Length: 624
Ligand SMILES: Nc1ncnc2c1ncn2[C@@H]1O[C@H](COP(=O)(O)OP(=O)(O)OP(=O)(O)O)[C@@H](O)[C@H]1O
Picture 1 (tube, protein in one colour):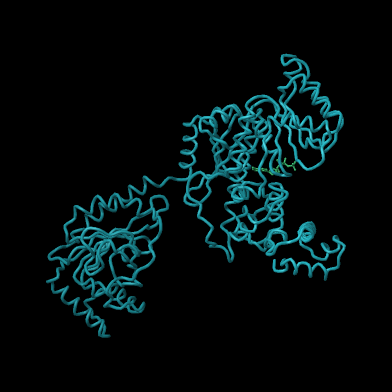
Picture 2 (picture 1 turned 60 degrees about the vertical axis):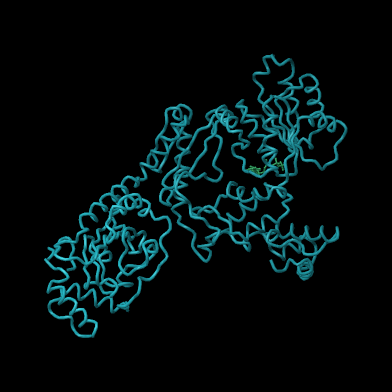
């Protein structure tokens, strides 16, 4: 009879009068009459529930549902079930269901009358779908349950007996599913012949689940130990406690540790802001975050505790939740060593894996090995300064002196040249930091002269200069650029490496409004960004990211319509003349400058609003 493990089992067999009378009671129930006094009330109620749910007694097979993907229960149970199933007699079957009574696995003999065992995954064994059965009963009561032949609601299972044992999640203590042993309806048993087996299997599965379940603290500790085993100076933080390796404690100041703590707290808080909601909540390009260590956008930053010292943060994700962060301290020497070992062409703080970008970085890294001048050439905002800083960081020398020739501060360049003048072994040499000279095209005559005479005297000076071609150059500057040209690298414009845009979107600082999660981008918006020609290159992209993040109130991935006007208009559909191209660009620029306000854009262009609308239509920009 239907039993749970605190109900004493009776001595019923199929031949038992009690079983025969149960069959008669069931027939009476299905003919619309009361089942009679001999039927336990909870069984009669279960039959009534099934009828209320509309379960057809002659169901040929349980209905199919979508089985869960990547079920942790199945992952833990499979080795146990695979080991046990071959030892069963051919008449016995094993079934595993999850907490919603969906079959995850079946094996051994099969559940009489149901599809073959390999077709059992994804069947609905809930009461609502198939009526009274042992798996549903064990899940409902939380105890071992048996259901025999005529107690089942379905005709399909009149000749089988099943015993189900609930499985509990070891940490949360919630029912995770059941394991069921099915056997032909036998004779003369007091408990199901598979009860001991079901208990043993359940115990083995729960042991396996326990072995796999790691509390978040354990996950944090494991990540910390793993990094230490790799020889890294590491700090693992979960927002309330931190694990600091002795090397990290030696390298980092209290202020930096406090900064890391704040960074980790912010990561946990941003993650706690919850998943995106709204119409694009399940946008197809959104991918669930897998468990493990996930790089944080903008994940590597310099710390002031030593020259070339940086910290790289990764988020620690466990069961889909961010539970902490791991900060790895990198000295310049260690970074250079490991980059060399891996043949790596990435530099800290710089994003990009496209071929043009990697070629640029690897050539620049190669040239930067020697302490000699280096010239980085490229359009505005391509990342010349960022690359220069990263290269100088690799050398692990003192922080560079940064001079921007565009700012025209008189005397600075000659002063630095003077500090370096003289033979390399001079006293002064030890004290002069390397020079990062931005915008060489804007150097004044006297600065160029000072540099030329320094280079004539000492060709190997620690100078990294950036140059944006375009402006006319006088003979002196041309000479300087010619000398530096032998050791120069040209950075590719962003439009020639659009495949780096997704990584840049994730890596560029966003500064979202307080409490807002970091931005994600819809496919449509990304396409629009990839179609743009980016005259301002990465700096322009960074500006767009900041603008969108700053004014955004919606949730979910950023949509194309949220991009600034100039970016959401599709490229021109017809060939434009030179004048038309210039006019179109001017209009887009004006709209951009005035936050898409057409009245103000028209005013700044010196045209009326109606004219602006007409031109927008003419250039096919009115639909954006
Ligand atoms: N590969 C990159 N990865 C991450 N950020 C980048 C990258 N390239 C550039 N950036 C960012 O883009 C912005 C502009 O870069 P940077 O100032 O280095 O450009 P630039 O070529 O020196 O510009 P300009 O010639 O106008 O001075 C900076 O905020 C920089 O951090």
